[in-house]
Length: 375
Image (cartoon, rainbow, N blue to C red; front, side, top):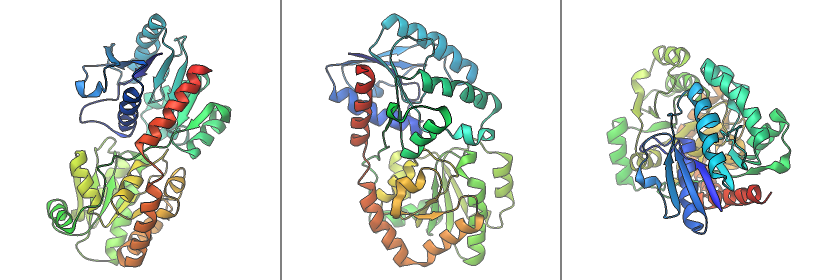
């Protein structure tokens, strides 16, 4: 079989959620299936590190697809031309974008439909592109994979897609995330939080990650529990909106907020394993990989009671209302003051995170690919 894959998000030192999904699954699938030939489509110079095995052939096609007009050009002209010429058995797109003008079988991994629920969180052109094309991608797809039962039902409801056409392929967790000893924890706190305990957020600073309410909740927590506890924010200021900026500027305790920017995986694993708790409270999420990364590190989790997050966390996290600053602040206070709660959540988190692995993800994605190719 010949399988063409959209690998435009395999960017060295810039892997985000979908990029990690692509990396972890494609690495395993290509190595496990040497009998098949994979063509990786890049939109720019690629890192040789992403050519996982001898059965992978890279192909760069222009232009660089980083803007809605260029999305259209790349997928509907360049990719379509390439696919119609190669006539592969399958086109796999881990970021959900398909080519409506291509004639081959296609599998879209649609991680979530956040833009259907909160379109104003995106720029005008991006949301117009998503809302026009993704319903068409869903209907064009031979099969669809998605990362939670919540997202599956959302795709069914929003786009009228048959449940039988959609496979749930849960995300996994990198094996480097694990507990660290007290010496590492102490050194990590000295480096990032002046030696103090800290709550931690990990993710792109996008509006739906709910950073503005997290700032307000941390301020409220500090008013109740004065001291040196910090809030460490790991991630890139992707959308530093006026609302997020205003919440930060108005903080009474903003001196206790630490911005690290992007961290390497080796840095992040120690920061995650040394936190008092992960405070990950988006108001919309297709899965929420940091939840299980924290569980692997024996770090208790505060997360949202909406969308996919209760499904992923189950009883292994403290659930709060992401739209309520009081609820988030109360969760932080409970986590700070109740050692038994932290221990209980750590134990439950250890069990829950065992249900997820990139090996399982890759196996489920491959099965979905086989269904598409054999349909």
